[in-house]
Length: 313
Image 1 (spheres, rainbow, N blue to C red):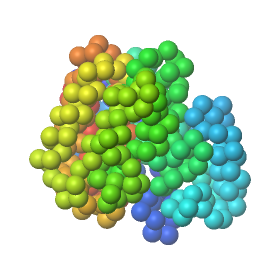
Image 2 (cartoon, rainbow, N blue to C red; image 1 turned 90 degrees about the vertical axis):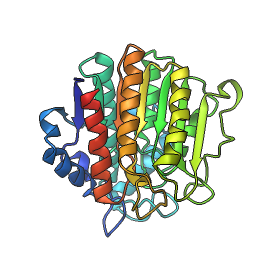
Image 3 (cartoon, rainbow, N blue to C red; image 1 turned 135 degrees about the vertical axis):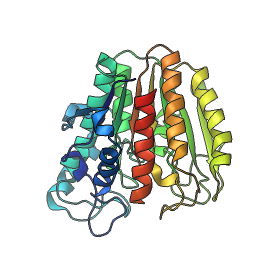
């Protein structure tokens, strides 16, 4: 049985937006109710979130973006992007804590204290180096990748099963062969952010290290299984030294913002396969981040499935 770290404390759950926003601050609590109901809290190790430092944020983000978030966090006025991500009071600290939680989990994996880790309020894959986007203020994934590269890792895999394309990870690393990218998502011709075409495979020295697998609206587990087999083969062929999984539950049928018809079993299967791959590569390191998901029952089912897979593998 793998040693699994779960960081889901009360301060981390504060990341979100008010007034009926899809990314409300109740999402982590929805996960925790099911997590405890299944007894997973007794089979995992709890961890504490922390605030990322300025220096850590700047590993990925520009100083101008960090400062803008800091300033608008004080007033809570306006938006941090074109209209999806409100500048609520305290959002700088809340977003910094998401980054800090993901960094804490990554450090525990690198130190060998645990073999797997899960952070439900993480995986903010739309934020770019320069600006917020799609409910994502800071990109914790980007900061983790930069931190792992600074620690000497040469090949890091990013695997995304969120319904939306992970554009905030793909484009910053489009030319970087060290970041192995595999992303299943609803076809960008029908859904935000409108990117992630199959033809986008990386550029320059990184050509062929990236795999985008758009799924037609209405796709079910059968279509996901075909795409997932390709994603797993792609990642395995590059023998990554660390695997980051973004397990957004908005690809499950019934999400209010998307149109795929997957079951939560897809998330559990993907996590199980990635854990087995990591073990076969000799390091066992898998960091899973919650990502999107706006139907609370769906995210509870998908994310507990990911944790079950981690515990059992």
